[in-house]
Image (cartoon, rainbow, N blue to C red):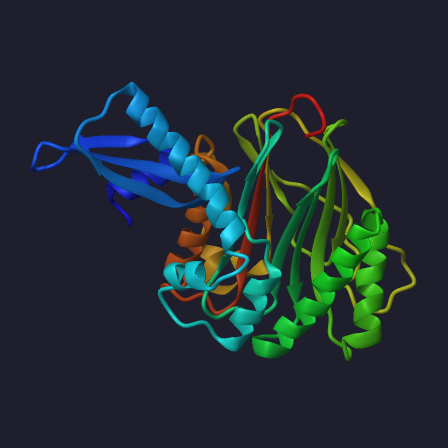
Length: 319
């Protein structure tokens, strides 16, 4: 859709209207649910006024909820989204990811991306929103192909199991580590786990051998220097250290895997790109970052490259 009016509608999240050759009105509306861009609704109508356009917008918003509900029961939407065949590893990997790559609330906007989409194995991102807490994880399982996808399944299953029983970020890290020690056959995975307290504007974070995050604050991009524990699955007498970060309205936090910085991708100046895209929506920022990495790798990154963008708006805690 690059360069089309559909791209414009998705990017700006605004309804578009134009006359067609027969004097009718072509209307295109974004189909979006809580920041997750599902697609567009296009209609050709004999005439439009304010009431008609309002009804079209409401219909598009309702359609988003219908698709979110219905896609649990069918592959039809997967068929519509795919333009190339997925490898077995990629098929496994995509089932691990949240169904929505973007989430918006009054307090924050979250957007995630992973490339290449059709041949991945190892990288995962995950998030869950509770009443007062946003849970985030970005992990990179050792290896490639199906073995790394299976390792990622084990890792993410342990993290979700811990999170769903109310474990804090330190216990989530320990249970993921123990799962790899017990079942990972000597393999390891790096990871970054975050619990964002929505009432206190604070992040509790564990870094298990992962690249440092980037923070854009007041127009300045800096790495966030963290203490780094060994990766999950590597025996160590040192417990996982929980570190705290503060959040200020306007902050943009970027989490990434090493595929965003290794080999050809190292030629991409992420700091410059983050400053250049600081006024864009988080969706557009992660797209710009992954597209820059793909271009640097001549369209085909040799390693998975994943990124999470968290924009903090602040405001009243809870949902």
